[in-house]
Length: 390
Figure 1 (tube, rainbow, N blue to C red):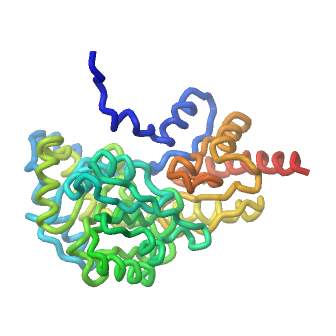
Figure 2 (cartoon, rainbow, N blue to C red; figure 1 turned 60 degrees about the vertical axis):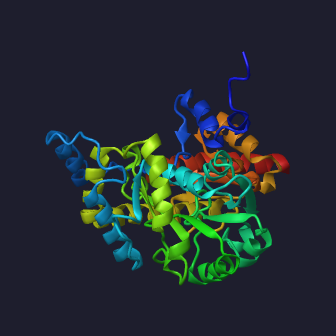
Figure 3 (cartoon, rainbow, N blue to C red; figure 1 turned 90 degrees about the horizontal axis):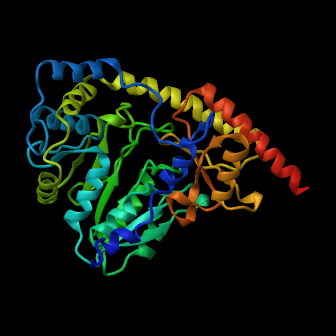
């Protein structure tokens, strides 16, 4: 038989997160601080709307681009939160999670050989999606001394005549880094100068703790060259509902819609009805969850200070990214030994790019009780390592 598999797919590395948690799933009594999934149930009024849609027999396909009511609510939401106006008919596409929007957005934009600038550490899907779309990923290594923000100089240095697209992954998974107005304005100047496009993944936009999230589309001249990606998984605790969306220029959304039509047909109908309710009446729920995350974030930062573990303060998402370079082992080795000896699961920083070496991702989308138990075990583990060094 001829080679029956795609070389391109074979060469993709499996997700570093999933590989690690396949091991965890086999262990009894392991405490996991690894998965980026809210520990809250979807708020009841949102679930109730999903149930009601089923009771009313709304089990049909929606239009390919999504329910009209949902697209209108998404536009109301972007207007309310960012002061940005989108046309619900031509500039909004409802997708199966933000991940589908990333995938089809890249496939709609990229020609073979186009370069995609991907700041790392960052979400695991950007690089493989760029490769599968025929693009060439160009990694920009974010630095702890810059609080893992993307600087205008780093962007300028990475641009070539083949650069087509910049992925802007803020608030950031795994570091918790954010971009403030000054950062975005300087980056936007470089983007306009070189006439490149932006894919801004803002799935954690509601979860910022220093100040209100600012989107790149709010900067002058950026809305017309940006695909804004967001969704319901993180802010509304709706991971399993699998719903996201993309907003952008009509010419781009039209091409994304074609791919979405052929591959997906439409996002889940029940989820779309629930999402309408989330956007209309979910602000209070988001604030309640955000307050809890912020309490956990402050607890972790204080715990790291007490155990002398270096960690820059994150102001977005629900992750911390402590540095473990002092122990002279790889991130994977540290995480494996922590799991083996203390039954605490964290994600090696290298799951999010090679420049994540020497770091761990710890999620605080878990109860304070679980965090306290796990961090106590981490402190014991760290102390043993330090004792062995002396």
